Length: 540
Image (tube, rainbow, N blue to C red):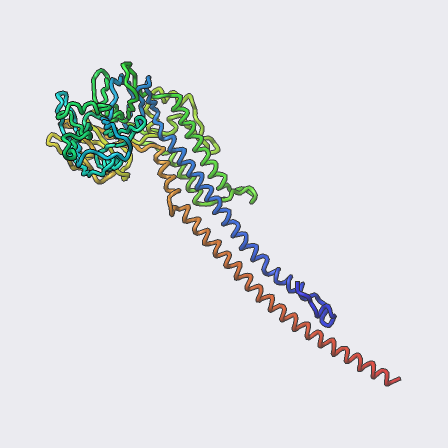
């Protein structure tokens, strides 16, 4: 605090001018500063709470994604030679298949031995490589275009290994030390009998034969260089023998990928069945997730009687809209999965008085028993038809869930809900209306079937959550506006401080002038007092 010298010397009014000026400035500045600071604090809390809310929706979306991977169908194998995995959950159907792996697919592998080191040079000037199949009669049928590697007298097996790996043939070359001072160059092709190799090496003169040659059709001894004969997998599938050039089979059971692990004479059952207990658990987990996010929104948005009972986003319209949208999504009928709409309440999910959800297990079990595949309406968007002779799939994301009527006429033309469809390469397509992006295939001469296009509840919720989490969402824009408001309020505080400093200077000038006047009045008074004293003295 500045020293009030006039008051200290008792030459002014005797008032503490500094304290008076401070009091006047504080009385004018404090209410305005408190009002602006309160607004800054409010916006800061709101920004922090919005960030927390965005994180909550991110966790909700992640957990919802985990739940949506479950379709209600449990896919499993009764043995260990085959592992079944869901590849496309929308195409998996309930059923059982009996299988055995009679032979695994193997990669054709050849080995050239007898090299003293990795830097040993090769005895060929070029190597021509073909991929194809070796027939039972010993002849080779090439299936790919021949590729040639040019070599010279200084090319080592390490150089050749690198050259082979750079070819676009799916070959893997490696050098293996078999024992002391003995190395082998191995070349492995992709799986299957159609990926077997033929290597025709041109020897360096004057040799007539190169050790890097593998052509049993010409040189029978070359068979000794074959470490593994390339072969297809052989599978017994429901009593039918099928072959595949790979140990990952995706086209035997629709929607399921089969990993062949080992050959066995034992038969295994690959099954897809609906599981009541796991479905109930999935629904309960969904209800828990919904209750977590809706309770969080309610607490943030709460408006109490007293200020201390308000939530950090009390009465915020954006948060209120989030709450309303969630409520609407969970109460809106789910269409496109059956002739009748499906409701969340069908699964026994009930709304409590406080807005949270709970599961009525008795009601759930009754619905599950009557409609075990109904969980798809919650977790699995899909396109189905009312006829096995008509296949349909949806592309893009501009479609609207619902039931559409497909009609194929005798002349090959087709309509969807009366709108003509185009025919491209045997596929009927439509590019307008609610079913835009729908593709239909059928071998039937005529057809009149229902196409069920269903969007799951989980996907609808994911779309809603994505709209919140995306860049420049409504939430981001609101945070941006609040950030701009804080910047504006801080400028107002700076302006207020500047204004009050000027006001302080004005008060100081005014009181200084007053003190100067009072000091002058005091001096005049003293002069008059002295004059009167002199006058009185002269009268005695």
